[in-house]
Length: 407
Ligand code: FES
Ligand SMILES: [Fe+2]
Image 1 (cartoon, helix red, strand yellow):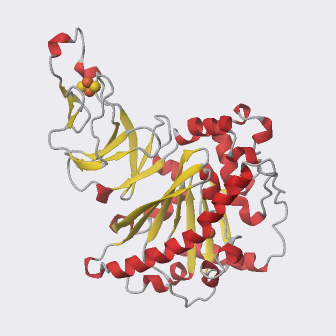
Image 2 (cartoon, protein in one colour):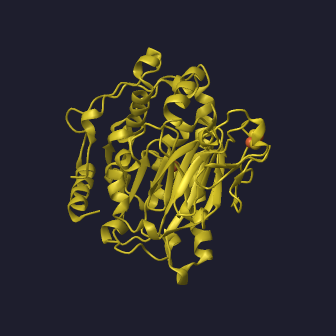
Image 3 (cartoon, helix red, strand yellow):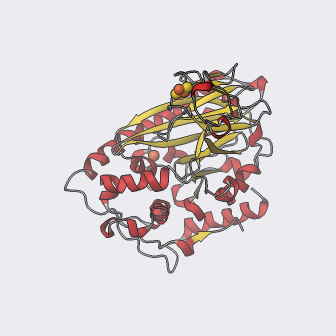
């Protein structure tokens, strides 16, 4: 974050602390209809137009340590194998044999010594996805092996993070991320190692789970003994970006406060006092939320499972310093974090039950909660408002409150 941006954000924090109402002209946001969390037709539209067309975080390069290493990734429903080829490039393919659809890999991760060999009749592909061997070829009349290569899936990197999209027409990842890309590439992200990975099953629609990560209005009630003690939610400043991304930056209550869970851990090179005294949390649309801290960051990645169940994947990354890989500190840091999650998760499960009942009414959102509205408006933009029943639509009211860059 350059000095100009820090200055701008610091002044916004002061504006937030001092303001008595939302800025002039900020619209009253219409209620979010409860049916958006429960109506099967709406969720089918969401699956088709959002999830199967979005850029989604899938893996970190530490999971693909050498040529031939792979990860089977099925979080978005489709079976996709992500691998490292002999040129050290990362590639992704549908894990679907071009003969009769057999799986090429069946384990979650591993090493491919002899290329990708189909488990059904043994068709073999190299790491570039080219069909290089098929048994009894003489019996396939007129089959051109050159036309039966594995179907590629687009994957691109942000530093060592690998993102995947099933949409061949999606913009390049860097263009899609825009200012968020600039922020992360200015950090020493190539030196972040993968520390740990765990998943939580949550009984609610994925959007209800996500929304708890997009505001700090709930801190006083839900996190009174934890986060609220060190973050000043009244100083929080929010930036809405194009394509649904957003940033929420919350100042620490005290300038000299240090997260006790990070004591002894190395900081990212180039860390400033501004980085130490504020907590920036990004939502990379749609499903990645990451609060960045000098000693590392978790990727909270949220996945729909069914209409009313979701999966939360928490993967921690940290600056790599082989002399300071203190696993005890990490155990403590993660358990602190999971304690905070434990304050949120039971609540959202109850809200799902509420949304499913005839007692549910529209959800009014405040100025502080505008990231949630921004998220929903982007979803409708992707689905196409004309496809959505009128009673479930969210109007695009925040376009003029959306920023195209940092300055
Ligand atoms: S399905 Fe793969 S070889 Fe037959
Ligand atoms: Fe929370």
